[in-house]
Length: 176
Image 1 (cartoon, rainbow, N blue to C red):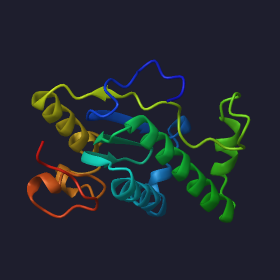
Image 2: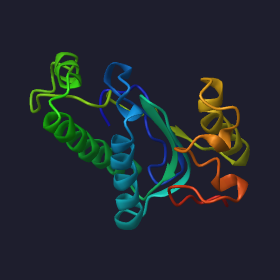
Image 3: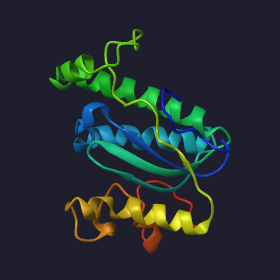
Image 4: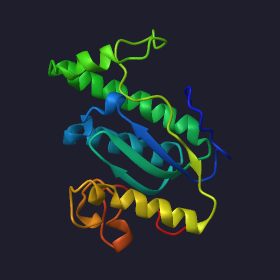
């Protein structure tokens, strides 16, 4: 998965992953782009056996606690598809963000004009319940620590609600 120094352990084990927008641009401040992420995640839940244990989507990155038979392949597909969708939307709107996505594109990415995601996903294999709890707390408190909300359950684009017994926006497995 890219030129990342982090590597997937068992590709079928649950992992904590972080996917960041190039140059930390706030692409997910636009709800339409978040919906593209959700649509792609739902697709992979149905078609690729992706299991989400937790997630948060911030304005310029997202964290997932996820598992799939071949998680690196699922994430590569997710990033490729969502990048194309986002670039298409920005192109249709003639957004100035396109210039930034082109200017900061890695030189070796010669097969495209724009780059949405930074390379890699910094995967960390989840090595037990204690680590799962730590990562869930980190994910859910991300918007709180940024000062966006007072309580994690108030962040719309997070699985914190699911862990409080309230409906979230994506299917999440809360028993692990």
